[in-house]
Length: 260
Length: 317
Image (cartoon, rainbow over all chains, first blue to last red; front, side):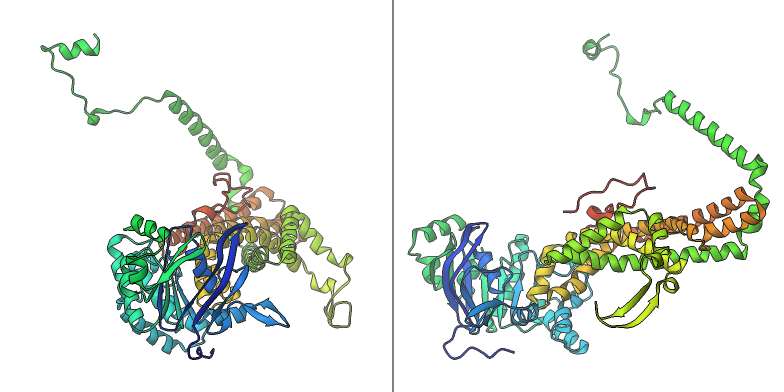
């Protein structure tokens, strides 16, 4: 659909983004970029705006200042004369096809089987033929280790299985970018590993990923870059080595001391 | 002797209590109530059997007569059509009510306010007399030329008047139930649909409505039972439903009570079948997969004039 980013152009560019809820600033003019193929983990205390930032990237939340670009195109808005206008439903839907999102609470379609969950968007949005969609879905299920569960309903699966289906469902749209909003926070401890393994596999396959997480081990082992956010700002950003082992800011240090 | 000294008494082993020895607690007041109820019931049964005015033979001879059966058929037809039309309009109203457009919201509110507020009987008569208000109905450019035009008199038969009145009333109640059902579907479902590139309309049609309808099936089943009874109002339009068919017979034969009994038995039989079907459906839905718990909306229907045993409406989350 959209042209790939030009050489050197970041896939995601967040530029001076501001956002407030009822007058309370949540994102305070923060900027960063993510290159294609990069895995970026966002860590920070709860209430620091991590999830909001993620939701702004696919326009589940609107921003009030600054701009977010996906592959060079502004997210959720169109040029309108010398000004901007909000995208129409169809335009926004078209842009969101390129951005997969995995939620903390899975959000699988409760009335549909695993297979129906995965083929829904390809059938309805991309108008893929049913045969192709089903074939792709089975391949994706194999990839997330859930061969044979195609006919189960979400409430028959464990949290870890549901989250893996949710990942497969997003991947079915062939997104350029995957957003993970605390994907393991709602899981029992023994189920976290299976989801992280699928994510790690995805990262190694070259997927561009932005992951909001409390799993420091995942950030350390898989991320190319770690961003530490606090109070709507990026406090520190760099390699996992830098941010997690040798943080230069006191706020980062005190956060890391609290979570480890 | 008090308990303390009993425990001290070594010559007498302590009494060991055992729940096996529990006998029924005597409840004299319950017994009196039961006797009175049985007495009244037996008097009623005695009246049913011995009162010659009931004329059970006449009841039996008309119960399956073609005139009455046609009435039953029309009653069922009206019930089904009015419910279907009411639900379709109700879904549209619910979506309008929840839309971002304040005009649509208010139009929906106005419709619901009007049709919940006007008694269905008044509506039936009003629709039937529509021709006195509007002489013709036409399709065309508003305030411009019209392409097709009908005389209202030929359009509004007793049947269409009945259908309009019943389905519009139902639509107002259905809209409120479906709105509650839509609101009970987790917000995350829509966000997931959006993040996959679905438009709001696609998310509503494919993801939210199927789950919302599953939640509101029990109250809709209940409304269907109410609708079956409300169709008897159409007898004022001389539409030969079950009640009017019975009335027609007794207008000829003066066998008023037996024919009212015929109608009563049929209504009871039909509502019983619907109630059993509704319970079976409800049970199946509760066992089935998917969808949030419908408990919050299960008792949303406000068309509860005759259902005193039902819990009061609760507010959906």
